Length: 299
Image 1 (tube, rainbow, N blue to C red):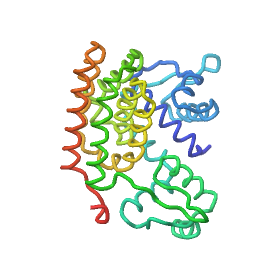
Image 2: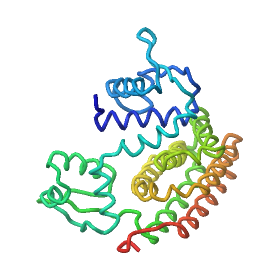
Image 3: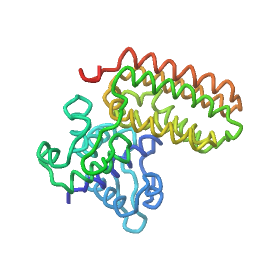
Image 4: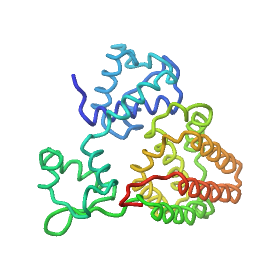
């Protein structure tokens, strides 16, 4: 049975989780736990696990549940395959056309339906997702208006200037608290990337690992507005970052810098961690200025 878009996305997230935690063969994949990790109900989890069992990556025991059939280290090809399959093609087409200057600032549903050959229901589902991500909004009356994206050198510079201002400040906040389990989860993922994972991880996996690190530390600041801002910036840069993630070597260096920040935090050296975070973000800003590519309209 073909998987739905949601089930496909859940399947991808299960693979991402297994690779992130570097799970060995035989690990029990509890449906209730995976539902919490992925943030969904158990029904799509069950469907995704059943499909993984059909293709041999998971074993099913009727009495005990599902177990990983192979080490997570052998799931690189599956991660590549399902990374692309998990995204709604219409979502990707709209995103790519917008980035390449093929869609105007203001659009209406009828024109989009004709341009992409889709039903109104399918279109509205994708537009709703884009609205939640913060790069389109419904206009009063009718139509939709695209909002600013991080799609130009100037936008990159501005976004990093904001991050440099707030992320180190979050570490120095008097409300900052250490959450060792959360930091250790980030450490395992960054160690995997630095060791060799940067060679085999998909662009989506690399971006999500980066976002998880920064959003975890923003959450520990105890300042809801710092967390909201970092999440918002991640949403805005997600699409263009996927395209930049093929540049593998800087990802290893970034992971090593993340690990140095985690080391300082776990030692209670918040000033040192804040300084390392500022240097890390400034280095990333300069790297993006050299390597980022945009559409002719955006440039």
